[in-house]
Length: 245
Ligand code: NAD
Image (cartoon, rainbow, N blue to C red; front, side, top):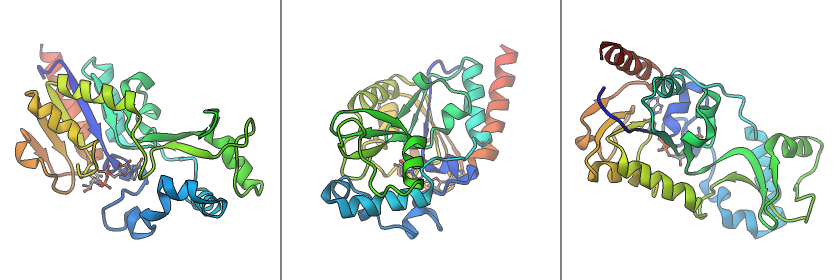
């Protein structure tokens, strides 16, 4: 593999083999929940809507006990081989870091579930701390310091993406010479612009996804297989190439 700047872009599909359902596949999250209930505006609306909000989060499991699968591990291996520039992810499950990638190599466009933040003073709480309060019977946890509204550190519908993360992810995409998409429908924007930026700048595109994406026809390699099965084979090929050099 001659590529110098490999950027991996991941969506919910990379984590389905870790037991976290994606949004749009059959049996996905949108068949069981109404997206309208999870908007930023709904969270801000009233204590009553916040109560419902936290109840759903508590039931769905605020902390993810999921473990990385062979696809996450393969990407971490790519990094150990010195072949990874960064991962840009739409996921909030932090499984890339759990697989061994350092925080500064993972750009979480939609935030994560590790922290809960106060919208008033910015104080951050580990999610386990808030979960413990919910488990003890608190219905609407608020900030201990200023009683402000708390929100998991993930981007909700109707909310802006974190600007510095989006800026750096855009920059890395534009500099990539190989851009690998894994497990994304590529229809959630602005995240889905990343492969377009990479293509426009001349990068080669590899897609590993079970269903079609809008940029399939621009891919140099299109792998219609499960990420957890395909990625270890891809890494094996990279290793052989690295050894042969
Ligand atoms: P999506 O649900 O729209 O699409 C997932 C894609 O992955 C589909 O095209 C599907 O065919 C494919 N897929 C499913 N399992 C696969 C597998 N094992 N191997 C290869 N491909 C597989 O997901 P998206 O495009 O990432 O966008 C939805 C939004 O959902 C994102 O913004 C993300 O923030 C959020 N989300 C995150 C998580 C998570 O953190 N794990 C889970 C659900 C949704």
